[in-house]
Structure formats: structure tokens, C-alpha cells
Amino acid sequence: MPYIYLIHWNAAEAEERAALLRALGYDVRCELPRGRAFFRDMAQDPPQALVIDLSRLPSQGRDFGVNLRLQAATRRIPLVYVGGGQAQVEAIRPLLPDATYTTWEAIAADLGAAIAHPPADPRVPTSAFEAYAGVPLPKKLGIKPGMAVGLLDAPPDFAEILGELPPSVTLRPGAVEGCALVIWFVTRQEELEREIPGIAARLGTAGLWIATPKQAAVRSGSVAADLTQNDVRRIGLTAGLVDYKVCSIDATWSGLLFTVRGPRKRLT
Image 1 (tube, helix red, strand yellow):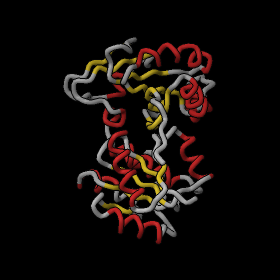
Image 2 (cartoon, helix red, strand yellow; image 1 turned 30 degrees about the vertical axis):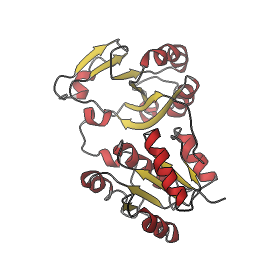
Image 3 (cartoon, rainbow, N blue to C red; image 1 turned 90 degrees about the vertical axis):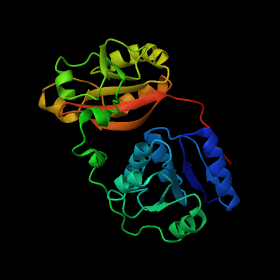
Image 4 (cartoon, one colour; image 1 turned 120 degrees about the horizontal axis):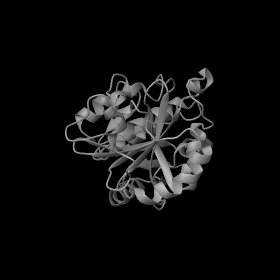
């Protein structure tokens, strides 16, 4: 049966928005995405449209739209952004000009039009990192003023790589508890599998960046590693974490951002 997929980062508000869409006659699926499996499942069973609410976590909503367009199997799915402020919309529009931008008050007409006229030749972003071109690394990593950031096994020069930090940020080597964000550098699969259950148990609501060497750096011999991002994602999921963001840190390192996975919920 045809359906639409709604992404909203607040469960109570998602219930309200899904009810509105159901009242318009749509079958609605609404559960928080599960990393790369989300796009694989969507390619196998594509919705009539992907509706993303920008009122919460707009940068993540932008990144989901970019990744939708990067996959050949999903790039022609109508993409509908709802709500958000003008600044959030204007930051996304150059990346995804063929998406529909609307409000919940106008969703009935605009969603119907988007489904009736899916993009025939959508713009494909150059990469998942296009939105971050020229963005300082602390902002890409989500480091905010006053934040305590735990660093696990970070390179000795990582503070220099980060550059200027927002006001009152503290870097805490070796810390997990009491941090709003943790950045963990890992090169070996055995180490990741051994240590991740304990780190996940101590995270609470903090985000966890797991940084691993890029394959180009491994091939060049500049760093030794036996991990790929697929390995990291699989091991993270096994430990009860789910990834939702990717970041190129420098020429050597890239990271996946994880959070503790909550109960998955589908609204029908």
C-alpha cells in the first residue's frame, strides 16, 4: 500500500503531525531513522514522499535529504520540508532546490502537488559533506558554547586541529560522564568491540563521535587500521547505539555520530 514517511525528532509532536496526515488520507510511517539501514529499506519500499519537519534538529533534516538524493534508488522520491524558520530553509534550498518547502497549514495542497509531480532530474549534491564546506570543525562536530567535550584516544595535536573553540568549551581527555559530547578515536575493530559496551553504558544523553581513519589514509600507509565505517555502524548498532550524522574531520579522520537508541516506534 502506498505510504508517506514522516521524520520528526519529538515523539509527541510526531503523533500530532502523523494524525494530521492520516486525516488527509495518507498511510503514515513514522519512526526515527536507523542509520544506513533507513536508506536501504526506503530503496526497497519507497514512499510516495518523505516529509521532514524542520522545527527540531534542522541540520539533521537537511542531511537526511542530502543522503536521499545521493542514493540513485531514492533520489526521485519527493522530498517535502515542513516548518522551520527562514534561515533554516534558505540554508537547505541551494543544496536541494527541487524539494518542496511548505508549512503545516499548507501541507494538504503542497504535499499532494509534490507527490503528483516527483522530480524528474533532481539535483544531486556533490557529497554528504557539501553542506559543511567552509564550516569550522567545531561547528561540524556540534561543539557549542559551554559544552564539556570528552576526548578518548585523541591524536596529540587534536586541539590544534579543532582550532578556535566556542566560548567556555572544556576539553576533557579520558572523560565520558559529565560530557555533552564525546569524541573517540579508534583504529582497531577488536578495540571497538571490546570497549564500546562500557562507553555506551556511560553516555546517557551525550552524543558519541566514533572517529576512524579514512581509507585513503590507510592505503597511503600514514595510519594503520582494520576498520571501515560499515564496521563501526554495525558494532555501534549491536551496542544499542544508532548513527545519524557523518563528518570529515581532517585528511586522516572521519567520524560517525551516535546516540543511545531509544524504542523504535511506528505510527499507523
